[in-house]
Image (cartoon, rainbow, N blue to C red):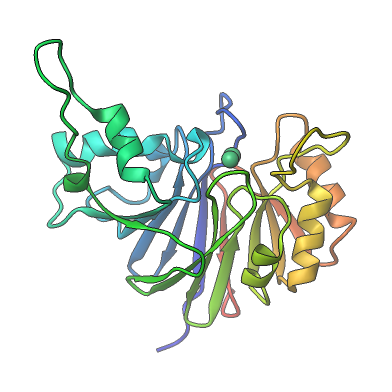
Length: 265
Ligand SMILES: [Zn+2]
Ligand SMILES: [Zn+2]
């Protein structure tokens, strides 16, 4: 059987809150019949369903528990448990430690006369907690996660299938783990939240120049800029990243899709 490339669809890429025409971070990665939702930022559950229903989704992968990357898990839960979504098993959810308790904290039903009860989060999601070096298969996809630098538990993801590879930074400052994870990948989907300039405290994001440098250092085949911060324009971010990287640089515009891999046509 001929190798099939990976397909990336950008459901949203805004930071740190959705704009009128761009949800927060969320992506659909598909390969053959496998579909995974990578980050569930606010506003991405709607456009996700232009491509796949919650009933047919194979897995969800969450980089970290900032709301611009996970808020739509809350309403996905309602869809999975209290609506017309029929699944034979809970939806596999790869996410940082503590995700079940965080979701339950939002979804708990309580009244003045009853002790608060934890919502049946695990009836909706089969939660598998990520750790540095975590590997799992979802359908035809191999998923490898590395812990990255974001001032809180946060992960980057490498998706591989049929010899093709896509790496997503999540939110992170430049770091060795991300550069290693992205080594030789066909495409690096990298955040560029920071406009640069003076900073107080710990660095937790990439600037566009950082994204270009990470792509160069990792030998990525192309760079897709996402999570472009509120003090940058996409065009400026692409231009600044391209100053540090010789390969193609594109903006992950909402609604756009990319074919990723050696077999890309
Ligand atoms: Zn974040
Ligand atoms: Zn973010």
